[in-house]
Amino acid sequence: GESVGLHLPTLSVQEGDNSIINCAYSNSASDYFIWYKQESGKGPQFIIDIRSNMDKRQGQRVTVLLNKTVKHLSLQIAATQPGDSAVYFCAESRQRTGFQKLVFGTGTRLLVSP
Amino acid sequence: KAGVTQTPRYLIKTRGQQVTLSCSPISGHRSVSWYQQTPGQGLQFLFEYFSETQRNKGNFPGRFSGRQFSNSRSEMNVSTLELGDSALYLCASSLVGRRPENGYTFGSGTRLTVV
Image (tube, rainbow over all chains, first blue to last red; front, side):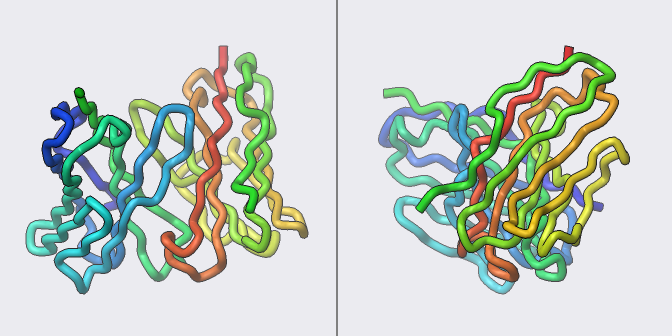
């Protein structure tokens, strides 16, 4: 079925700590995964993506890990800053739909304390 | 360049009424997708339009419909509103066939409240 879920609804960290946000997906046919950040009053903003033929991808302060064996995706944020406070969504995309249809997880709220 | 523009930002309607939301994509983007966001269900895909044709559709009742114009602007309509239709409605525009990092951009949404 089409379901992408998250383990934790809220994650609280201290500024400077590393944050890890997890996501589980159910469809092994998914071939592309994306992490989005959504701040209050705004639409989701693209953070980083990973194809199903990769295990890890790094960006600026962010790393996405994909474990296809257990259908698990994680987003790691290094040296978390107050500006990282937002809701984070993982999303699943399938090339056969032309990438225009995304299946989103329910979201994890990240709270960063100074 | 201008981003995805959604109007209005906020809307309050009464049960049984109908509503039309508008989305203007980024210039040059020809694909527009619509999503419904609620606290309980999260972000759910409604439909996608390209070249004035609906290409993909999510699992929503027929009360939810949309269309796209020749300038790629899109509208979605919800008829016979129910309380459960209260949500943030987001649209995203993209270049056809491109992965999300290549231009799948969301607007800020229209907050619809049904009373």
